[in-house]
Length: 273
Image 1 (cartoon, rainbow, N blue to C red):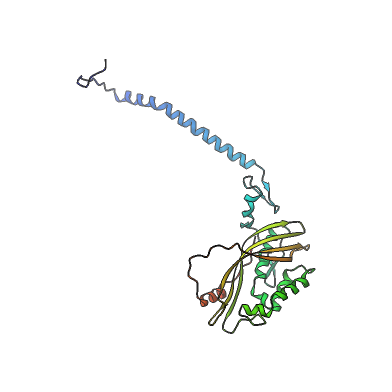
Image 2: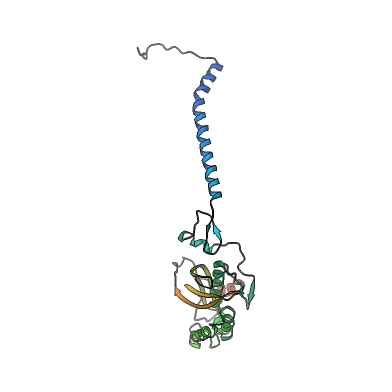
């Protein structure tokens, strides 16, 4: 019969040793279960690590390899622009990197550096333009490229940038024309010829008192076609398309002097892929 609230209760106190034994006996089974679960999880982690270590790497388009969970295709495309730690080129001619390896990475490095050269202020001067083209162009197409660019960089073109017919800035002003590659991708790779897209941002304009062409920013994609000449990748053709351009940031524009000082104080770079 259940005990009522007004009935006295009898409590029995066990000795301390017996209390400890009772508690330990109750906890033994959950503890064994926990240890069993932890052991199973540990074995699974070790098995996965061993499987990934032994999994053969997937081949990449540039002749290198990558781990199995980063196979070639759309998911691996951004890695082609990531730093690899490999020196892309060690020699220069007329300040432009030359001697690229006969690989996809070498082609992308060449395209990025050629984009910088084609977007330099030297292109607005006849002598500078021809020096750039002689350095980066395939000799078989050099005359045609020179004629094409001579038609593009006319005295009228220079005037739109505030330059004289020889491509020089007015006295006391600095002409800014600098390109920064943001990324590259191979769109048509082959052993002897390749086409690489270079996503670029650039600065162009005049700095200094009285400038009528303030320095502004531009975004475009330069498609560079190159041929392997036996010792280097050389330019055979190029085209340009606008964008993709991001939204302008909420940032105060620098003064003309600040831009001029920055251009003179910060040197440019050669680029890897």
